[in-house]
Length: 269
Image (tube, rainbow, N blue to C red; front, side, top):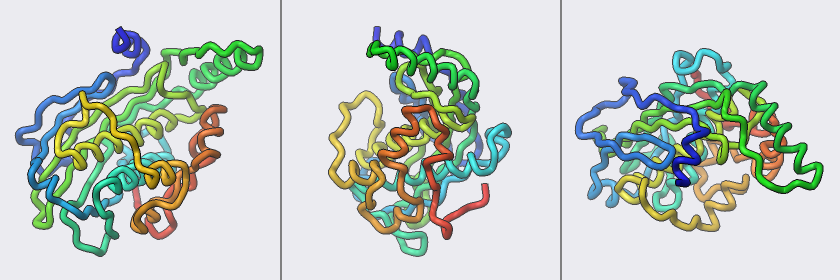
């Protein structure tokens, strides 16, 4: 019943093969309540790996012509930052010039923009009752919801694919807070994808249908804008933390609170 309730106010996202993976062989469906995915993982190799390098994610204009270059860069970096924090739970994350057991590569293949007018209306609808002392949660208006589709893989030292995931999810009226930005939902979903792909590599199996693990203090601190566990993660900048949470709660665009990657890690998108 809970799944039906969530899906009734959820945008759809296409689970399509974008052609960026080195191989699509043996990928099998593995869906969560809201996300759809195709997954393949060489469990023994991935569990034996100890170090990981994160190649900056790419977000080509063709994947979402409506979003600006700056917005696409912000979403791609949100993937990298969350992936770096997530993988730090088991792996040592190394810099781009260091050897690693695994190297991750991610590309955004589709991103439906958020309707700013609908998002703003949803935020007003939720704020007004709270201002009047009514504390019941108000679902987001189920219109103008964004979505995100990505392809990701992890290569070994020889460049052979050891894990791969195609992931698609749409924003919904109950768990994705609206922000007045065409990139708002894509930005929000970027972190959710990174959590699922991190879990695939940490556990060596599909992240769906499993009980969530409690985050470490390092992960909690980095997620709130604190210092990451590994220096390599600083390349993706620090998250907006509490200020970002407050801004998001007010419906402000993530572009206002997230400073993005460090200057020396800016990539053309």
